Length: 258
Length: 284
Image (cartoon, rainbow over all chains, first blue to last red; front, side, top):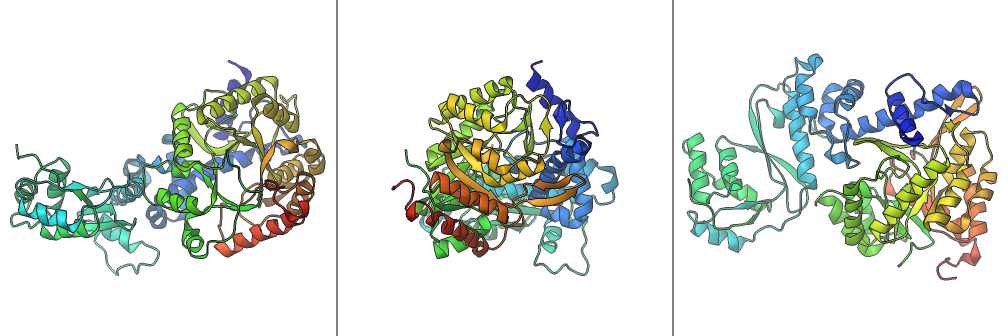
């Protein structure tokens, strides 16, 4: 192996051990270990901070010290593979799920999924909202038209109260006296017309309605899909929310139900 | 191709965007970290588009791993090219360091020995970057904490040869000079005397942290505080020799309110006003 490839490989190994790479030294060689530790610390600390920036509520729930230790474990198991650190952490919810010391906190993975999807929504492509005239026209032909959702729209169907926990742990929030983490919640995540990422509760039937639209169904077929999940489901409030947020970009002619 | 104005600039922080839009401060440029603008859309691009209308932009990469042994990441180069095409920045710069090992990204600017082998590697990488981006780049001198027994060239000699062989310019980080020379118990003025100042297209100034070791101070380049007084002195001495140069104030951790950054930029402006009779290098 060429010398530089060999050296960087040894340097990388030494970042995760007590060893020193061959040839690394200092003006006072007795201080080499302390000086090399600056790199070890920079790598671990900067990546832990990057993960905390992506999952601030998880950090808040676990405390900074526990989170920093957890981040080091995660970093070892799932190191970033791109300099675009905002894409690092997709495996974090699953990691939380399988991390034995956190077995008593089964809601954490769902909260982490919500944070991950918020980040995806933040960086999603831009798209202009459909205007009120298009909405009015589409409302006349629900059996023919679907609704194209903004690229930032995400749906989280959580087994736990991810949204309630997330909201209670915002910096300005007053946490409720009692919180039942065990209530399943479905959440709509989107970036609105003012470029704000929003998280909104979904009612039973809403996820089926949205998923049908995302698959190209007509408004009518999507409403029927929602009814199969929730008798009496009315898609009106959700459509209004989406329209007001600028989260519908077009009302194309949709697929007829299979 | 246009160049950065020979005036102070600031690193752009999204939390300062409202203050910048409201006050439109007089600054030579804003510098952005390229990797933060590689998402598809959303606030980062909206803010950068707005910023670009009012200011010159310096695109500063932190993830290309120019000093690493492997091939440069072609996807990452393509993303940089897309940013260059979209925003037409006045400058693109990167670091004399490595930050990836294989596919793994380490998120730090790691050091390399200065040898004929690494000189060839770095020159090949810079040739490739300049070819792929269709422009001259600036390469930044590192802050280092260790030395390599393998090194056969000094850092200034290494940078001089890179600039000569590739035609790239240099980004002189004076805080890094102070940090490295203090850490290695050498002389910052001697380093700057050896530095090819005619190749410098931009200066960086930032803050550092200090620890005490038995042999003396260990400085850490953490960009988390104001520029230290000895760094200001070295800066004034340097621009007295070069004339005014684009000068970035870097403050990336524990970022203060915008007014505090602006005060640092004004301090740099005061020093630049004193050189070349106050005229800008580009106009002189």
